[in-house]
Amino acid sequence: RIVYVNGEYVPEEEAKISVFDRGFLFADGVYEVTSVLEGRLVDFAGHITRLRRSLSELEMASPCTDEALEAIHRELIARNNLTEGVIYLQVTRGAADRDFAYPAEGTQPSLVLFTQDKTLIDTKAARDGIKVASVPDIRWGRRDIKTVQLLAPSMCKMAAKAQGADDAWMVEDGFVTEGTSNNAYIVTGDGTLVTRNLSNAILHGITRAAVLRMAREAQIKVEERPFTIDEAKAAREAFVTAASSFVNPVVEIDGVSLGDGTPGPIARRLREIYIEESLKTAT
Ligand code: PLP
Image (tube, rainbow, N blue to C red; front, side, top):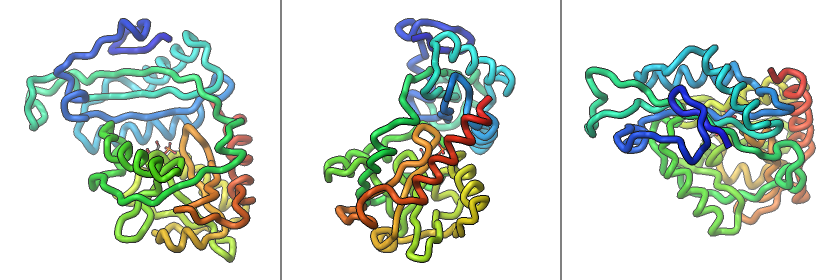
């Protein structure tokens, strides 16, 4: 596999980053994951807009222009013959002598991209749904910034797996924040789609924005508000969204089956609409 590191396309074994890189020492970096269908990028503009916001919230310099970032994505798709999968992009503040303060003289940011072959459309999770377990949300207070400090969600996911679930739904003060790498939704008894409102408590999902727009266009009633784990267990159906998995039905929460225990109709419909539209609009 060919990866991109600071201006060069190299075989992955040859890629090098400084041990003083602040991404390595402080998790001082941000990232994006864009899905690729038929060799084209899904919602690339949304990912670039969010990347710009993450960089600006951390006062981090940009490594290059949007056009250059797009060109690197396309070059990696071509070099690795990627048809279906994801492209991971990471920007860190770069190398500096170890100090908590950002270097006053500034740094040259590091830019790394690589591709991952991955089946996105025809997956077991989409067919059968996933099981989630509730786990306390132990992350920091700026979850709206897509940083590379992912140990807390890793620990949450491991705790969920230890309980036999596929993923965690992280819970704070009784309310679900989100999944470890996805946004969380329920459908109430009267057919209303509920997902947590945007704030610093969750990542502002690019897929979330698209799916909520599609739900409204399909005349599904949408409420953006926090919901409790108890409300979720009593829901008619539930699902999660992320760029790398689209819409995945949730069929069990803490061992409680939702509905008849199979993927719900609204989750299945939104997944279908999302894939159909993404295939049409991917660039
Ligand atoms: N929430 C968290 C914590 C995530 O890490 C992600 C994506 O990786 C999402 C939500 C979904 O965001 P997106 O739809 O932009 O992939």
